[in-house]
Structures are given as structure tokens and as C-alpha cells.
Image (cartoon, rainbow, N blue to C red; front, side, top):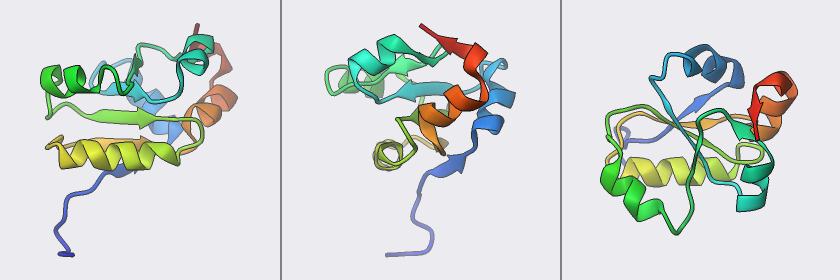
Length: 110
């Protein structure tokens, strides 16, 4: 494995909060449908196996993408997958939606 292999970066909840209102980052949520419906980060896109191909085809690979899951573990694999699909600025949200909900309970969309 070479040292210059592309990989995703980590993002803290507070950093996402700081950039969210700028509409500079796309947030994709990979949790199950029920969890997504019960609460999500505002304007997050629900990314599923069913709509992944559409997302890959339609999304701008140079726009920063933040991948959100429950706790920040599954999002790392999904983020690395997006990097492998030539997305250039991919982040895994550390702490995931659970951390977002703890820090910003008033900024959960339902």
C-alpha cells in the first residue's frame, strides 16, 4: 500500500454544525429507513443500496460529502467506498447521528 493512497477524513459534529448552514457539504445518512425517518440531520440525503447508483451518477464528486451513520463506525467504510468512486472530499462523521442528537437536539429533522 502506498503512502499517497486516497482516503477519507474524519469530521467532528461541531465542525459539521459550523459548515451546515453554508450548504457547502452534502450529508448522506446510511442508517436504516426507520431510523432516518425518526430523526436526521437537516437536509441529509438517505443513501441506501437502492439509490446508491443514482447518487454516484448524479452527485458532484468534488463537493464535500459527509457520511453519517449511528455512531461513526459504518460511515468509515461507506466513506472509503465513495473515495474509491473518485469523490475527492469525503468525511466520516465521528460519533455519527447519536453524537449529533446529543449535541444539537434542537437541530434534528423528522
